[in-house]
Image (cartoon, rainbow over all chains, first blue to last red; front, side, top):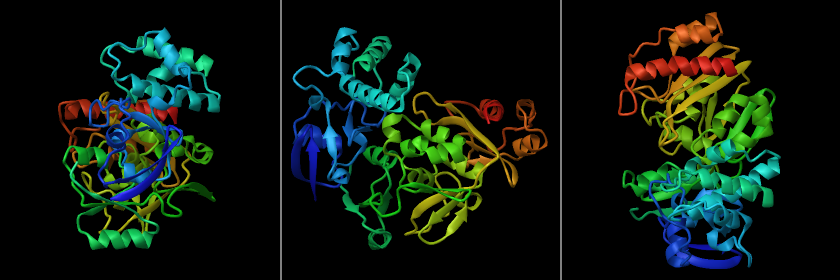
Length: 156
Length: 264
């Protein structure tokens, strides 16, 4: 067992974890933050994306023991009273149907917009589609997701 | 996942000691392949020795005309590095096309090179650019490093610490990704440098990444799209699977080589 300290959604957390504990399991089962979804378990679908030190990462392919000291943000940590602009845009543009992939889509979308803004790049529809290659949705056909991310980019 | 032990190595000596104490221990350098493999029960290391916290393993520097990339540097950091973009723009754009953004935030060059997946991108860059793999024991030319499917010249307890790239006069990488996995169905890296033209192919070889002699000869004589398309690539040693036959891959090699030359 490894003792880890981390900050999750702004709160300090200390736990003992076994070496094989995935961050996704740790978040869902130890911390009961079940907004982070596990869709494929093969590291492909992106439903489990969270931010570690501000960067989008697949929590199902990250060991909890390996991120001692990190700052983790999950979908539960985005809203600050009001919905985060990315969440509001997904709602506004109906960027979801069943909603299973949505937490990962939103976390990837926020990461993308943050990076593009920092680099002064335009959040084009083509760029959004390219950036969401690691997030799979089986309902929407992606059109409204792309619209939502582009809309949120104007408000973030 | 089967139970395993996690160890964060503080130094190379620390990592070597941990690896030496347990036959079933392995290095964790990012885990974007390893952890996925462990989840499928295709690997069950008893201990994961994380080398990412070791001093000097992360970072990018220019030493004269040589680009030095620490083994635990992520794909995103390579792609975004001004030094890499200036010294080897083809390498930066290759790194920007590995997997997806979340994978690029965690996966590392050392991990990719040590794993030598037959469809990985980095091995093609190392071979074509004539890179040198630096370990805790020695330095090896890329030509002597890659050794068949998932095989390398690494010995037990040997740890990649950096990869050094010489500067090419012109270089580019073109990849036809398998759309589900985003790995290369065929990827071709072309480079013109001090040793002439070097062309490497990933995703297509029965024995993993390889240099294409017909393409090197054709592009060495005439650095053009037409020369790439006209090369007699053949199907010997090429892979056939559900994604494409050897003949399909042979054609893609020429097409990707031509696209690479056009963008170099």
